[in-house]
Length: 199
Length: 245
Image (cartoon, rainbow over all chains, first blue to last red; front, side, top):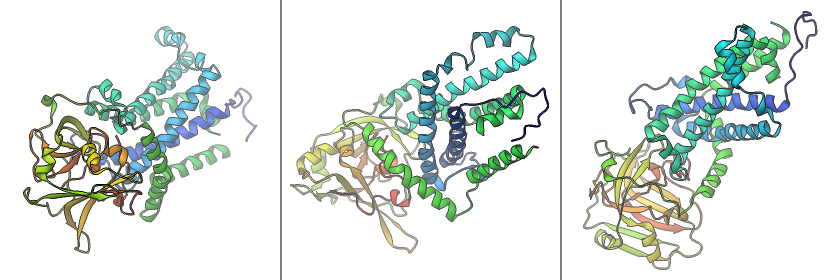
């Protein structure tokens, strides 16, 4: 690791091992779930059904529908349990108190004039919105996997098609948030911040 | 680009290749099977843990039945044309009272009608009405022995395999799912006698299992004590066995 950085550069931020581990497991399982999810999508497209637009096989993971499902139901454990333990960790370490978007950030976004502070607040808003988004994908997925055992989830969303649509929308939502999260991390802390969370 | 940065970049790209490509053909198949073998026992145990014969699937008003669209896929080249008069259902294996029943005898047994959601492995679902004999009622009559743990169903449905031989459709269920009150031997669909296409004269219709588990043209039911080598048509093609909902 180089130490010949210019004098004005702050040191590489130190990240908790837990935060690094969470990011690694999350990004790997999310891509595996998205790829295999598209494979499952192709068996019967959510929009229009059989014969409608389906995704190129090169974008998908798993061989056939059975294979796509094996991938999906393999990585769902990593994804779900990763969210669970990280959630517990956030509460146990009281990170939830100051690591996520709060009213102060929202005030800055509305009225603030300092662009650096605004970027910072915007970044907090973006990564915080990952939480409800990922929980929604987990909930809708659970509803479709176990519509009898978790019948209340299907009832909550009203219809099967709503459930399928919302579960599918996780893909563009994750990708969009991922892009904003990465760009804002680069803006706020440059490459060394991005690197610090993975290495 | 600094060295570290380049290294990280290379690591990330390697991961990308691993996730998106996984080589071709055989490698992909191996990865598939590995994931299946690693997760399926866990998934099936978890599903069985969640399952309760007391928990009923939601039922719907008749107005919500999806009438316009045909139900389901078929694998057969040959739709069996079973004569309702000559049809017989054989129930045997690990039971005290093996029996053979005609359709008339089956229809004289307790009848249940339900409007439920049938979910396909592909992801779509349909609201259907099934009417028929709760499988648990039949099981009570034949009295499974204590060793019986699984139920094997044989269909009259046939198709030609790649060698041109006629092959059958079959399924294996766990006993707990068979005694669930909404697991029916169906002879009535959407208020009418079931059509040939949908499995006449008798099929399984249950909201607690994926579509492919709901076997059509059932001719034989056999209670067994372990999962047979050939579990089911789609399972032997690589799909999961439990398929619970």
